[in-house]
Amino acid sequence: MGMAKDRLDVIASADPELAAIMARELERQEHTLELIPSENIASPAVLAAVGSWLTNKYAEGTPGKRYYGGCEFVDQVERLCQERAEKLFGADHANVQPHCGSSANLAAYMALCKPGDTILGMDLSHGGHLTHGSPVSFSGIFYHAEFYGVSPETEQLDYDLVRQRAREVRPTMLVAGASAYPRVFDFAALADIAHEVGARLLVDMAHFAGLVAGGAHPNPVPFADVVTLTTHKTLRGPWGGMVLCRDEHTKAVDKSVFPGAQGGPLLHAIAGKAVALKAWGDPEMADYAQRVVANAGRLAEGLMAEDLRLVSGGTDNHLMLIDLRPLGLTGRQVQEAFDRAGITVNRNSIPFDEASKFNPSGIRLGTPAVTTRGMGGAEMDEIAHLVALLIHNLGDEKVSAEVSRRARALCEAHPLPYG
Ligand SMILES: *Cc1c(COP(=O)(O)O)cnc(C)c1O
Image (tube, rainbow, N blue to C red; front, side, top):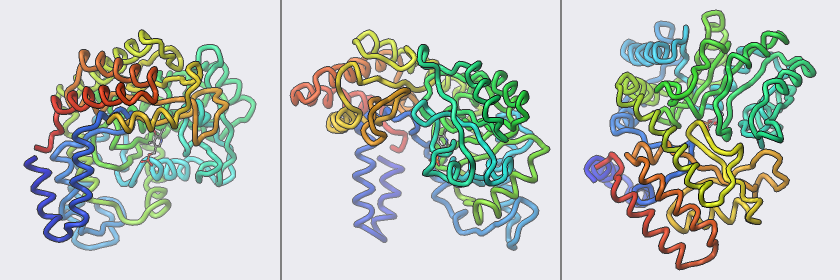
């Protein structure tokens, strides 16, 4: 592989031990079917920007208002990235410095709430994220967290139930967005609920930012006070986070990112974010976002046709959850069987799961990475079949070997873009 090989050679000349491990990870990525919905494959240009000399620069502050000298060019880098984000999502302001989605959320919380305030977020086992009020996260440690969840009948959000919870707990901030919710959100309804109870609305679009960028998911920006996202999931950028907000929150958001939540920005990562955002100006990327959703729909249909139950009966975004309870299986054993067969998935809690978080009853699958590799409908049918074969024949070594061979063939026909 050209680009990857060149980089490994450079690393190997300084550190052969590390280069050998990284070569094995590259080989793993090349030959395994990546179905974790929060993962993706960054472009060579993104990798090159992240692996650049911009890592050498300290630039605490914001463009034009730094605490260090020599910032004239990194100011331009950061401004370029901000302008692209603001234009792409239609936001008044973008802060592109957060190191990850969690620190973007920390900054958003600090901008909109005081410690001890009540927040209302989506229950973790119903699809929410740790940073939406879990007792092990800053969000549940420093804030008073209350939760809403999906309806037991539909396993989808019922906005009347969310409204009822909001009236009960009167939160300072309503948090929406999820890591494991296979449906689109009604942002107008959420904004209306927040408005009724006098709450601020934070939408965390970490998972579906790329779908929004490509027009395959509604955009929360017109409805929310603040929107946070990650840049490494569907958005196909480098590891990182971002905060978008209305003008009225710009000062509070910037102050909360630095010095509130972080020190100096990672200019190399910001350069990578800029490259990724530029790509979304290309009609090919809108097509990518549509294909991610179409592929997820097709994969979901295929799985249900093979007698697998999906939470909420399907998907309308990039991910889906298989309920393993009817099969008497647990998430951990299935995830491990998939690992042995060269397919990467992750175990996940599902709504009303009685099992432990460590060994929950669901498996979460998504299509962003396989779609980046160029897979389409025919490949989704094959993947659905392989997933079903493996789950229905857990522990059968012959089946596992067969699935492994066919998963590898799919990967070989759709190589990583690093050659
Ligand atoms: C992934 C995710 C995050 C956090 O992202 P990190 O970069 O891992 O900190 C936050 N919120 C949601 C909904 C996510 O899915």
